[in-house]
Length: 291
Image 1 (tube, one colour):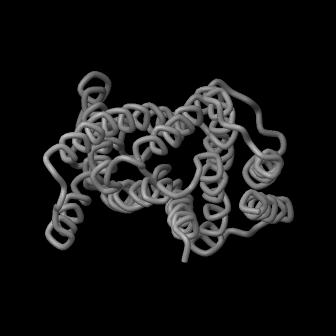
Image 2 (cartoon, one colour; image 1 turned 90 degrees about the vertical axis):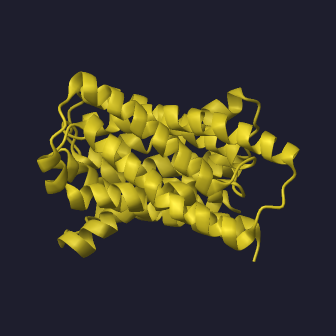
């Protein structure tokens, strides 16, 4: 079994968890402010990874030299700060807009990191082959059919949400850089403590902490914290060790497919022909990119 295949499976699992997490994020807006929600969920995500890190340290052991430890600790520190700062911007903007943008439109705009990742990559000197370029166009078309409802009116929060998509694209590229140098669980853990700390600073300025509201929102926060942050983002870092960032962004776009399928299975929603075409287009785009 190739490392590329294992990495792709990890990224597909990430997309699946992200797809379902939109429900938790929407529920969170009913109870908590965006910065409070992200501060608590990110802290839970970081805490949930500590036992994993300790477990593997005792099982695998540490055979690094002092020089190797110094270099890796330095990479981990700067990687955690960089990934955490970019992810804080992306998550905060997205959570703020979730209250004002319909879920389908939010899913479409948020997934437009699919465009930003290759654009930034080209500016950084990466050459894209023809299959990947075609796949990107097909995936964007699929996202449009799957998520965007005809007659939707553009508003200011749509534009702000597009900034969030840009930061998610930057995050994918930053993770690609540091995932090659650090441990996935440690990098994920540190980035979420950074997100939690930055979010808490904004809570102190713009929001008030209500422990009653946090407790009332415990189920969405637990899913968004432990499952989405602790599990999915760690799988993202692990998967991107073996998958180029542009291909990774295409796989991540499947989160919209999983969001629709999750609505069918959990909320008894139905899929229209337009949404079915969108799902088929996205799946075809991912397969084409791997040819």
